[in-house]
Every structure is written in structure tokens, then in C-alpha cells.
Image (cartoon, rainbow over all chains, first blue to last red; front, side, top):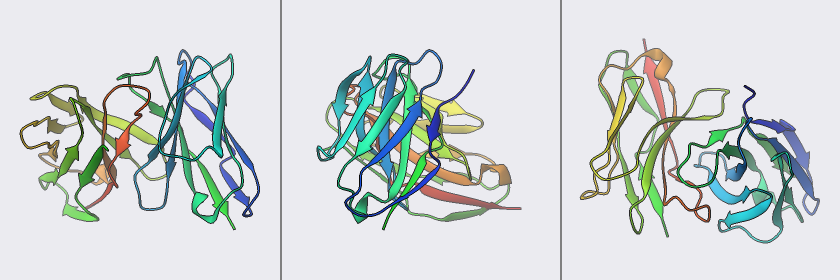
Length: 113
Length: 113
């Protein structure tokens, strides 16, 4: 059984650019959640996708957007990058939303210069 | 809004010592509570969970009891090992996709031989 994978591992962008991060969910999982983890902080919930629809959103501006595909993989897009967007971005998949265990990927480290 | 507060680290203990990592929460309703662990170079892993008051979650010798009267979910282990060195995150969710997981800042645990 393949776990949650994310790509790329590391990424460097400059302020104002756009970035796309990718996540492949664990086999059998139809729900993907994205989190932002700043250095020394706990992860913060960005949004969740369930069956290709956004199912819930945390306190992040609209320049953070996402997609989920029919195979349940997902993308996180961030437009107009700011220095404070530098963080580890974590993807987690689960079987259905709610209280089911979320399985986390290793993350993508984004640095904005 | 919901929040989780956990003790600041790093926490340094000798092998076989007793461990307590404090966690308190603020949330409306009846959240479910979790402890996640992040080993060096790895993704977040669920350690244990409790879904209602007075439930005790346990795994790998770790335990935590959901105390609604004190809004706490302290993590304990009777005898720690060097391999327990990691960052531990307390988290909660009210179960809806709109909320995701709310994490504390994490506690870095260092076990010395």
C-alpha cells in the first residue's frame, strides 16, 4: 500500500510568483486536506477536498486555492507569493471526512525570497 | 475560535524517566482529541486519539485521557526510550470538514541515554 506522497520536496520562489504543489493520496482515500506549517509552529489547516469539491476551509486568503482530481490526487496553488508563505506544506489523506485518521505526507518545503 | 496550548520545549529526559507533556484546549462543543508525533525526517503520524470525555487513548506505551472538566489531554509514558525522541503535537477537531485539525505548536522531546 502506497502512502501519501508529495512533490516537489523543496521549492524556491520569489515574491509575487505563483506555485503549485502536488499530493497523491493513499490508496482508497477520497479526502485530502492541506496544512501550512511555519518554522517552529504547528500545522494550520488550509482547506479540505472531498470527491473533487472543497469541503471546508481555514483562515487563509483566496490566493490559496486547490483542486482534486478524479483519482483523488490534489494540487495546492498559491498566487502572488509573499515572504510569509515560506513554510512546510503538508498534505493528508483520509477515508471520508470527519473523524477518520488523516495520514500525512512528508511535506513540501517552500522558500519565498 | 478553537485553540490548543501545549508545553514549550525542548523537554530533555533521561532514558527510563516518566514523561508528561501537558495539553489544554479551547473549543465549542465536544471535540475529538489527538496526539501526533513527528520523528526526525518523517511525516506526522497519529499516536493516539480520544473521541469523548473520559476516553483514554493509548499506543506504544503512551497514554492520554480526555478530561472535559479541565479541558486537558496530557500525554504520559511510564518509561521513555531514546527512540521516543521526536516532536509531539496535540490536536483537536470537531469532526466537520470545515474545521480540519487544529494543532498546538509542538513539543520537542529529547531522550538522553
